[in-house]
Image 1 (cartoon, helix red, strand yellow):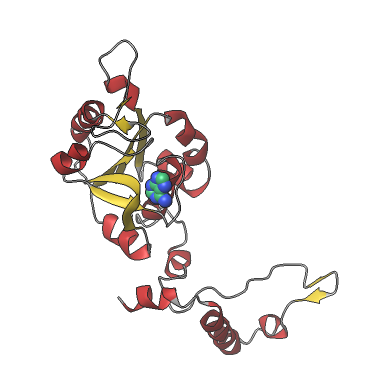
Image 2 (tube, rainbow, N blue to C red; image 1 turned 180 degrees about the vertical axis):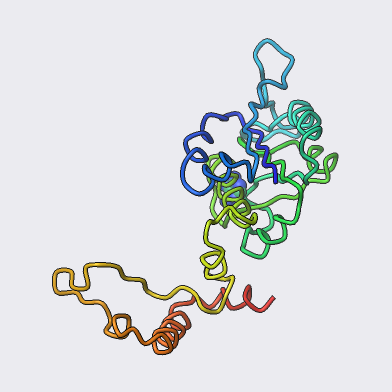
Length: 224
Ligand code: ADE
């Protein structure tokens, strides 16, 4: 699966995706990732990517031409849908990540300023996605969240398939409190059951803990 991100800050992505699970997946060729500099698709001397909104109002709007030209150029290698990161978009959750991983790739556009000229959305049939009801200074951090959530569902990216199945939301058996050595840390001890070696009891304890811990809104996701 290929991920192409269009941004005015391509350098933000290197440090994030060179590390950890996603970094290794890119190295192993399981996923492709590239951040594209939007300014490379401008034709004027100032490499301007924004302009004043028609109808007036504060702030600036991202111009359509560079974004559309960037997507046209990326399309040669990436046949996936176009996603615009916007705070008013459809909310990202595990279900949406699982739906998007079925695509051959994603082309993710990071908004800045007051928004992107709406002809980008209509011309490209783009989907608007939000990572939550709060406003960030741009779509870059949201794009990282989306790419991470989808990429780790690509088969092989998460080394141990069991750990993927055990992710919260993915399975009923999730989200229990975890402990590692030492068994006694400053007088805080690990629950006896986990040291018992009785796997049936451990499983039951974890199931109970997970049920207590799970936030109510996650129930909805699980049922579908
Ligand atoms: N851009 C700014 N805030 C955002 C959010 N919450 N989700 C997606 N894109 C955004």
